Amino acid sequence: MADVTLKNVRKSFGTFTALENLDIEIRSGEFVALLGPSGCGKSTTLRMLAGLEFPSAGEISIDGRVVNDVAPGKRDIAMVFQSYALYPHMTVGQNIAYPLRKRGVPKDERAAAVQKAAELLQLEPLLDRKPAQLSGGQQQRVALGRALVREPKVFLLDEPLSNLDAKLRSYMRAELIELHRRLGKTMVYVTHDQLEAMTMADRIAVMHGGRLQQFDTPDAVYNRPANRFVASFIGTPSMNQIEGTLAGDTFTRGAMTVPLDRARFAAEDGPCVMGVRPEAVTIGTGHVAATIRLVENTGHELIVSLALEDGTRLLSRVEAGRRLSIGQTVQITFEPDAIHLFAPEDDGARLNTDEDASVIPMRSH
Image (cartoon, rainbow, N blue to C red):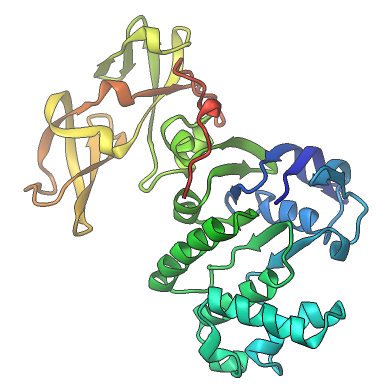
């Protein structure tokens, strides 16, 4: 196992800055997800860890050793690509054994390592097949097997599930969680899929515009987002954000007034944004009037689109079976303990005064 550290890392391509002042410390044996939209810098970060790109400034270290100028093959890492990058003319067994053959490992040792990886990934019946004869999930496991036999200190995974269908992605998420539990190795996983990050990672580095927005546990980024971007990016549906004004112990937007426990917020009177998750918007009680615009039945719950009197749109998640009709006027309320306040800027910081989320310990799979 090994820790991975990026200190004040910057990466530029000509005049374009892909990453700016990136500081991340990944603990030995931790599963960390780099999460964000396309172009946020997550894949560039992974490529720099792998040695496929070099930082323009800052320092990258693996297991206490600075690797800024170290070639990929000497970093003791293994990378699994989105495309799997299997050799089509080789069998599964030959693909898995290739890194060892390249290093000159004796044939009997290669065979033992391939067998061990095949057992771990349930590939024994497939060892003599070619990649074209495999399903997407099987190819993904072969790519993992090829990484496993190298016994690296750090695994780097670049959106390895993005080419799979939804059912297979769910299965492979569980397989990767179990694999990490068995191996106990440091894993850095790039994804744009928040469900993957939330269900698999010990901690999530949320990135946007080449900058780190928040690096914390899944619970923290969901329940205590650092700013408006994290609040909107994490969660399906995303957090409702309502622009308004804070005065005393009341948040106001048009005719809507929401009482607040002012001690929960480090905010001054004036413009701000109230955030509330859809599951904390209750339909049927309260003094805020809204009109139902759309009802989406997902089977186990309803996603209800609401419009306030001034046209502001909100989403609510309610239990399945409720009789709600489009055009119906309802009363809504917001769970007081689930209200967030943010500074009004696009990347405005969260203004709640609750416990610092960074002290939450790493969870165990």
